[in-house]
Figure 1 (cartoon, helix red, strand yellow):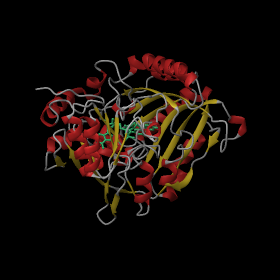
Figure 2 (spheres, rainbow, N blue to C red):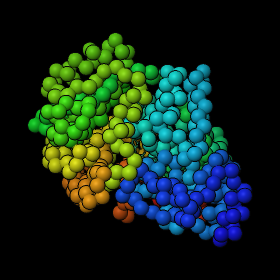
Figure 3 (cartoon, rainbow, N blue to C red):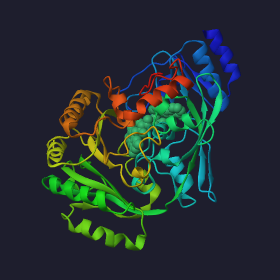
Figure 4 (cartoon, rainbow, N blue to C red):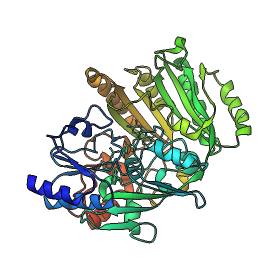
Length: 457
Ligand SMILES: Cc1cc2nc3c(=O)[nH]c(=O)nc-3n(C[C@H](O)[C@H](O)[C@H](O)COP(=O)(O)OP(=O)(O)OC[C@H]3O[C@@H](n4cnc5c(N)ncnc54)[C@H](O)[C@@H]3O)c2cc1C
């Protein structure tokens, strides 16, 4: 094998990192500090050709292969044990075309790099809420965030992907070329090949009226009802995700709130700025809030607001549901568990997936959950490995108690390695078609370190 690896080195522009190399431990680190996998080969690809070489090498040598873009997968799906990591994190090109409002983006970019490039032109790509997330995984799983009600999911802006298939062939997928593959990529995760280039449409967004607002825990029931009512009836210019949290013990939060268990919403208003105060008047009158950091800021400032609070390397354990309705009973369960958050990094978020997300039918892309109102994630997080058991138990209990009120399935990007059937539930009526497309493009299931869809007839 060593001779083969040496020969591969001579054929690539990027580099290969193995266990004996000094940078190996750094290279196998991913965002979730709970994951500790030891791949045999990490191939840091420089370009599309390198990715083709990597896929061919993995397939010809029967290696397990994982795909890494931003390394944010909670389940650690960017890495494999012993096998080959196809690492795209150094593929960083971004080309914004302001006239056509499009961007061609290489898979190694983080959201904050993309936000910066598009913001210069007064444009934005609807995507996630933390700037260090990778564009590769978030796009292929769907892409939920502050602009979802206004602009839909990240996949709703995907115009074209270039994909290295398991065969090593480089193909395009768009509405005319390989349309079945294009359909599957929009939500079907990393099952179908390695995406080496994404072309997106962008929307005009420059400054937003946004930020967090908190209420005391005793107000949580009323606040959830008030919030739910707004999110179902407000214009698509208003977005907010609801959270239970513990106020972090540091700036910019006022001392008297440090370590207090509260509930809140992180808002994002994208309508005319001169109307913002008016839109927020009834919101401010509700409560009133015990903290109000909502003001006009540049969109990238919102998208990176929590990056420092969540540096790479913390322990993460995720559970998730889709939610059709908030009922009195489900609100009661949320309050019960939201009042027992184990650490100040742990939280639960309810992300609205209505508004423009509902403008696309569930069968139009692989993302089958357009009927849900919220995507809820419950995350136990701590810097301390000793807390792993406690944060995991909290997330699991919360998830279990919400099960009777959930819509079935979860957003695949918010899942760990789930129990049997959860992936199928998440794709619902699209699951069979995904299996058939998988059979066409990856019949041997070479790409299986993901929320896996097995080939089927
Ligand atoms: C702190 C944090 C915040 C988050 N916030 C949001 C959010 O606001 N909205 C949201 O929707 N999600 C969010 N997520 C979830 C996120 O979408 C997923 O973790 C996603 O997988 C991250 O993408 P990545 O490229 O960083 O992941 P990686 O770990 O690099 O990749 C994960 C998997 O995606 C697939 N994949 C990645 N790149 C490619 C590619 N180029 N070609 C083929 N397959 C590929 C592979 O199967 C890979 O195993 C968040 C995650 C974290 C940890």
